[in-house]
Image (cartoon, rainbow, N blue to C red; front, side, top):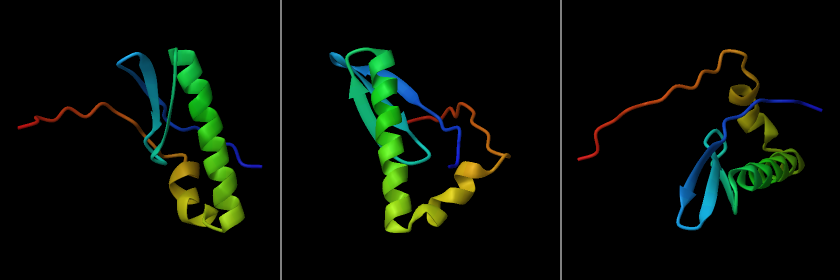
Length: 79
């Protein structure tokens, strides 16, 4: 079993909270931030389980397990 730490971005959209794991492009939602996070964790776990079953785990493994990963806010100008 492999443990990885991923990023969860959560924001309010209309009457729900959207959650996104940007490293994997996996998203979910919930009625509260906690529910959105819980649902995202479930979706990510299913995604990774599927990756192992389909034999694509090695394609996504290196960036997820690297000890030298960093996240930072990135401000850009939208024209």
